[in-house]
Image (cartoon, rainbow, N blue to C red; front, side):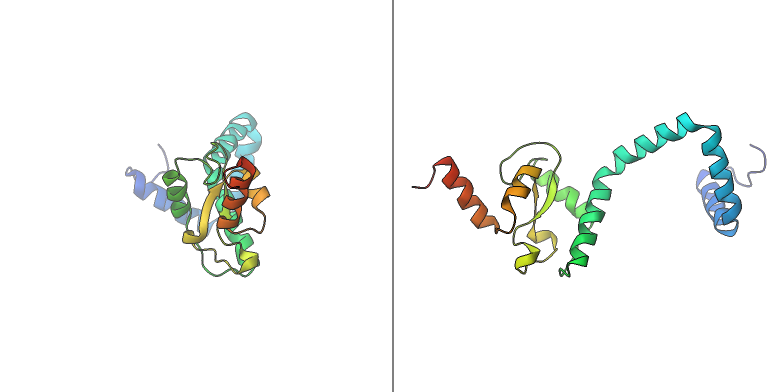
Length: 150
């Protein structure tokens, strides 16, 4: 490669990041030019990135929403992914697989926190049906609907 000062990949990346910080306008112009010249490759890279980062973006949005509502505490994306894995990638209420949303065992509106201990992965259906109920209230409702409690 010509014009690259380092053969070591890590040093080369560090150099490139530093150069981009110093030459922000040039870097932006070069990126725009590349995207215009390679629209298909850009679209494919964008789709791949979005697929890889879907859970991260969802977690960031949920944390922001809780902050806006004034909830105490926070959690990391890693903590959330570990919680989902501990539930087997299934809803914590009905056990359905698929896309899972953050649900608060004690809702923020009823004084719950946004700490990982207060979260449970929930499918969209259960999350919508639970609304402002606590986890116990929702489990009782599910049991009544199944006819478990007389």
